Length: 260
Image (cartoon, rainbow, N blue to C red):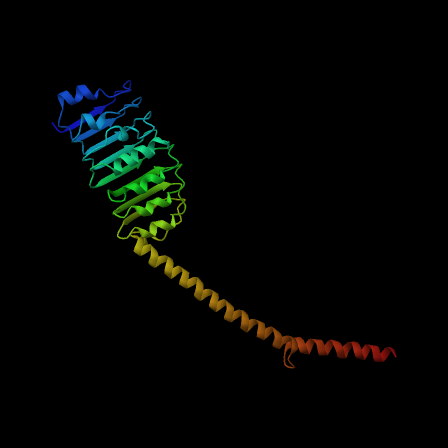
């Protein structure tokens, strides 16, 4: 047996990993679903060294990734955290560092529906050689990405949906060859046809800057012409301003002459 699903153990606060490992020693996929009070899995990877997929869903008391730092995973390929109580804390830094020093080759991290998550650790840049996929979906309090995300040179997929992120960091331009899926009401991003990669977004913004430059050039030309026309109308003999001034001068001169 390689797949293990633990479902709806609401009173469980700590996984009985030693007992589970004795019965299921070769687990490669572990799915923990709706274990609302679960908050401790510190010996997870020492108990299941062959674990490749870990999925936590509906574990509302699971607030940190500290369990990753106790025994570094060796072959983890997918870490899926959905509808958990994740919040940023210093233990994240230890967990990310442990992942970066592990034997992991390719890792995909999915963080979804974690309503309280406000920040990703800057140390995520340490996963540059290991992280190939990152999904951030339905995280309403996540307002920005760390600049260190530009260090993820092997990232091939970045999904950002329904967060409070408005602007992507400039360093994201270093993610050459990374496919992107971007959406959300608050995010300022290019049209859909230009969201597939960094290169496509660069093309879009370069064209946009060029259109703004052309518009400024045209505006300068039109302003210059308008200024010349205004001067001609006011001061030149054939201009309407000159004629009005002349007529006013003649009229006032005539009235003054009659009074004398």
